[in-house]
Image 1 (tube, rainbow, N blue to C red):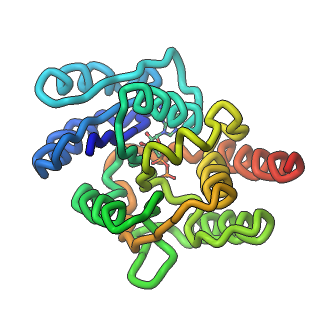
Image 2 (cartoon, protein in one colour; image 1 turned 180 degrees about the vertical axis):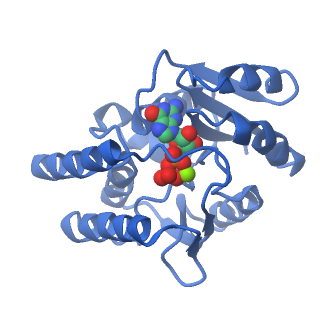
Length: 233
Ligand SMILES: Nc1nc2c(ncn2[C@@H]2O[C@H](COP(=O)(O)OP(=O)(O)O)[C@@H](O)[C@H]2O)c(=O)[nH]1
Ligand SMILES: [Mg+2]
């Protein structure tokens, strides 16, 4: 199965330089990476270009920081056009352990259409987050599960794998949310499609290099985007 990992990056130079070789050292069959870099001021773009000479890495370069949701949409479209069978979402900061990738593919082979790496099911966990960050994460998920009536437990997890057909049928053009709340709109659409969503436990490790892009402004936007989305459905 042709597999692509879609990975948005903004100021992840320190991480990406180690993460890309680590992913490809796992020798996962027919795997490539599509990185969406928003002209990172830390020079990540040049590092990715250099790595793309040694590894199957493609880059989508955008002029300026334009949000995680639209970065994923751009990556999904490129991957669909290229005919990939499995399409992953994954962060570039080592919060998502590359060793888990094969477990996601295993679930697809057992019949899942979408696999979500969940921090909030038994054996799943988040380490090194502040109490404030934990509370924020839990409340965002609680709100989304109640209001959107979602069955999925971890609706903001960014470690996921989709069968190509799911993303084709999702109507990517119609996705309304761009910022972090984008992660909630996708499971909402997947549940409407009644595809087989499987959650597997992951240990989410907080980044050790670089900074989170989830600023206070992003948090305000997150709740605003979510509430306006909810008002439209
Ligand atoms: N291209 C792009 N990537 C982004 C943007 N915002 C966040 N990211 C990337 O999305 C991933 C998740 O962001 P992160 O800051 O780690 O969020 P957190 O894990 O929720 O604290 C990381 O790989 C970031 O570099 C953006 O506006 N554009
Ligand atoms: Mg992160």
